[in-house]
Image (cartoon, rainbow, N blue to C red):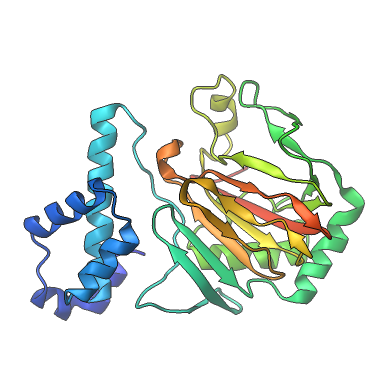
Length: 296
């Protein structure tokens, strides 16, 4: 969430609750001791801090701490990322043309599960538009910038051009409003189809900086900084989206979506994720990747 919006809502509270150097030192101490941001935030609220002030202090302090840590260790610096407007423990958020439920929110890694992002009719229509164009899914080859079939990814899929049809255009505008990230900074929607046994083993969505093909890939919009996976049906069993670093699995539910961001191309973002094997039935998903700049 943006600092300006927090300050506008909480100016009087901030006047009473001063964020001191001692508080920031305490936050850093908790983080280095292994406490999760969620637990630190809960502890601050339990001690009397209002949620908006506590969240701002926590976010600003950890950003500064991570930036200092990156500089000291030769790691990539963090960049701005898409971020839904989640304040005051809200469980619903306006996405431009419809209200979306906030089912779950995690700070580190940044993961938000949304309910009702797509209607059943939108899910069904997207599947039918994609079905005739499906082919064996490929992955980006970082060394060359091209793509190829990879044994880690056993789905079939296709890409829509951004704004290719009215449905894609409507979904893209909704995602832009939801994540507060420009439509033009997004890749086109990718639709994937998984049958029993099909999976996508854990991987990162950013492009590995050390690979020779990455500079060429980054000419089109820079790094990926955010992902939205939208579930177009509910498999009978299996097919969840897994985050191994934090032992999290998001169940695929028709119309729901999982958003996650990564502020630098490094495993420290804990954005490692995968598509668990489908056990029974089939799974359809639509994926939206967001770039730093205009994707053209």
